[in-house]
Image (cartoon, rainbow, N blue to C red):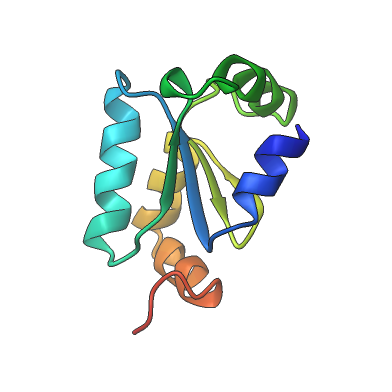
Length: 102
């Protein structure tokens, strides 16, 4: 869990993904379209991936990917991010964390 928290705090927006996950791809694209450049950690391409996946599940992320952190705080998975985007608060969260500037 320490590795996940450490990686999540290194950049304003961080997404833990798997390369084969279509929802992960969609969430990454959403962030790019909003102007953010998130740090993306693909668990299936990381030697500590399985360990990090268990840590994410332990933090309440189910399914474990995509797991999104903004400003070092766990925000949620794809369902949560899409809900935040639809109600207009995702952009503000990214601005507050200085992941985007508008």
